[in-house]
Image 1 (tube, rainbow, N blue to C red):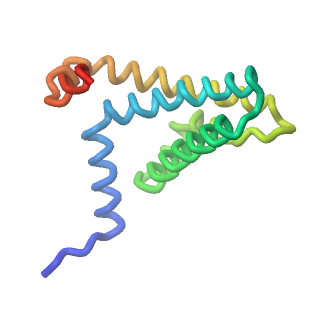
Image 2: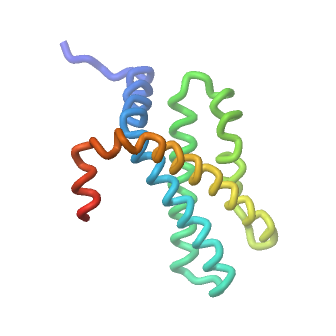
Image 3: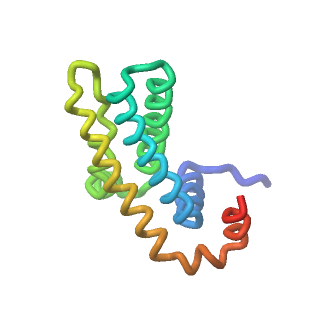
Length: 138
């Protein structure tokens, strides 16, 4: 008989995937957070453009999907929401009339630096990874 995927099974597979790729995950979202902050400054310096606005929306969607998918996958959502409050606050969209809310994107830097720090603390494990040499060459 064929095994059907239950929501709990899918949740466990998702969490296992993130855990087994934790360093890459943290570095990816850390880099995206740095880009998101840079895009915010570009918008202020160069004015609004369709390219900047599209990039900003795409990055916001990536953070929103990451936060909500991880929130849905954890067993204790209340605890996850408390531990990732900065991420939730940084997701508040900044509308035209409330430009001050754009400063909330700086909170995303806290996560970026924390993720990069965690990845750096496991550098030995990263260095032994078979794809690391390929990544350095690329």
